[in-house]
Image (cartoon, rainbow, N blue to C red; front, side):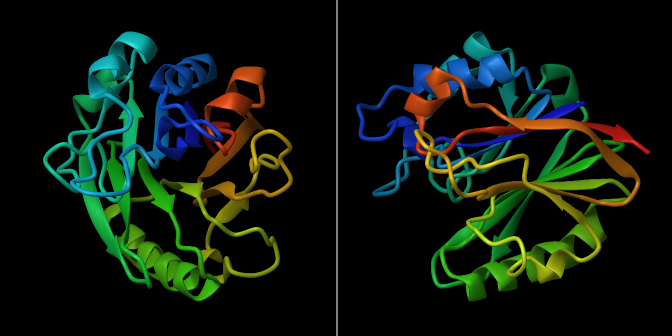
Length: 225
């Protein structure tokens, strides 16, 4: 199964204009079975969708998770959603996980019969990120079953600190993903539970991806060990 994560930067590219078709083309090129998205809604007001849901299935073949968004016109919750193959959506159950911190944050957990995927967009301060990972780790054990993958924008540029609460997981950063034109920081990661293996992983660094957002997408092919 191919999993992916992508911070869309509200579909504005590096400096605008709003052009969601570029982001959808990047997603289509990745060919994911499941992809966690961050910053799918605009930041202010009623948080309307920046990624139009009417285009998603037509452009990518995927469907968004059935989620109560932040607002009536939001695609995601705190800017996050998960897209998946339509056949997976038939058995999927989605939960929202409120997270602590100085700014409003939340995770989304997609429960499938054999796998739970948790999409993350962690805070800007390390103290908030640690508290958020502690909350997610505790919740994952209750809702996730035996096979869990966390993925998203961890906002952590260090490999040797800030991720201590994931001691039971294997943390994988496929490569530098930020900033997109000249990536230097490994902000986007996967954390996988025992019983899963990463067969291959990478960063989507094509020319279109470098223009579509300030982050590059990451992907991983996973199998059951």
